[in-house]
Image 1 (cartoon, rainbow, N blue to C red):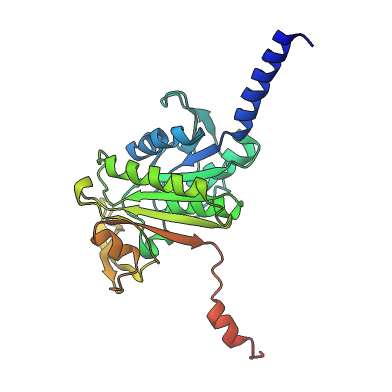
Image 2: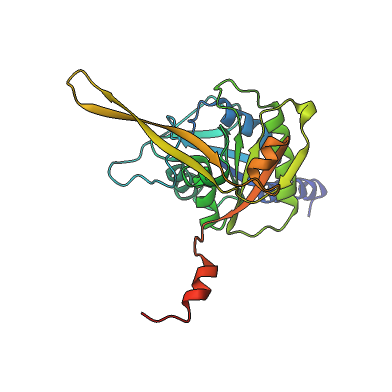
Amino acid sequence: MDFKFKIVTFAVERILDQMEQEKIILITNDDGIISKGLLSLVEVAKSFGRVIVVAPDKPQSGMGHAITVNHPLRMHTYSQFEHVEAYACSGTPVDCVKLGIYEVLNRKPDLILSGINHGENTSTNVLYSGTMSAAVEGAMEGVVSVGFSLADFDEDADFTLAQLVVKKVLEWVLKNDLPIHTCYNVNIPKIESSAFQGIKFARQAYAFWEDRFDKRWDQFKKPYYWMTGEFKDLDQQEDTDLWALKNGYASIVPTQFDMTDYKALETFKTQHL
């Protein structure tokens, strides 16, 4: 075999091998494809592999694990990310994950990331969160998935600290053999980087919204309602995600989609109906 041909063949094999080893990272969110949090996440993730974005074309906060079944889904290319393949989708965050896997990639990615959400997703908020539902969907698909949220609702929030946390979490995720059916809920406090205490593993706090409704009347004298309320933290222990945020830490809560109450199940096993 010609020596020059050997060199070219070796170089091509090296490139193909590197392409095979490159991590495929699917990214979505629930604030919409134009959000600053999504852009901040993409900027960090690009250094860890090939990024593909499939995100809602409009805000989808509070959609939980909703999927679109009553009308068609639409998806079109989005060119505002530099050197990143991106698509805007008319559906929910979970729709975006499904389309990303089965239509855009035609394979499962190595990693699914969701966020960075504008506003925290601590405690029971995870049940309503489109951000975390996208990560849960990834876990259901057997893909290691992480949802990121910053405790700042400002559309122009400062994501400097959040990007530092994302980098550290991705380094940890990619160097460890993590359970594939568990996703990770990461919340970052709204503080100066100088006040940041680090990253803590935590459990989901027992806290919830004490709901109220503001009843109003339209011009046709028909009532309508705005949901209001107050967030109640009933869990003051030092091992929770809420405690971590209040004390300058980012929190990581391992989260699973199996909602079986195994303690109750053990109790009921001796009963017969």
